[in-house]
Image 1 (tube, one colour):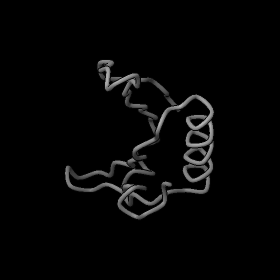
Image 2 (cartoon, rainbow, N blue to C red; image 1 turned 180 degrees about the vertical axis):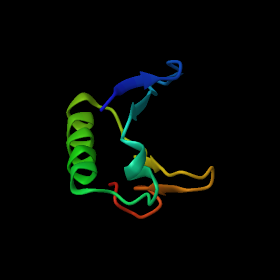
Image 3 (tube, rainbow, N blue to C red; image 1 turned 60 degrees about the horizontal axis):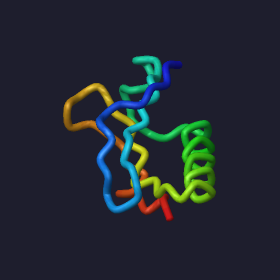
Image 4 (cartoon, rainbow, N blue to C red; image 1 turned 120 degrees about the vertical axis):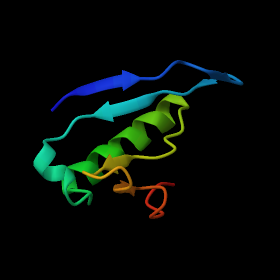
Length: 79
């Protein structure tokens, strides 16, 4: 599994936006549905963000096709 941050930092007031990209094996991207690990990671990121004053806006899982994705925000799974 590969983890990296991407995108430029943009000041929005006192906050900073960053994208967190986590690579997953290609076989898991065919049917983009969150695994238990995805759900647990998202909860940990949201909890850590709250401690640091960072709002997690979304966690997106990309699928094989350009239109294939799963959005935690779209599904109402983020506070």
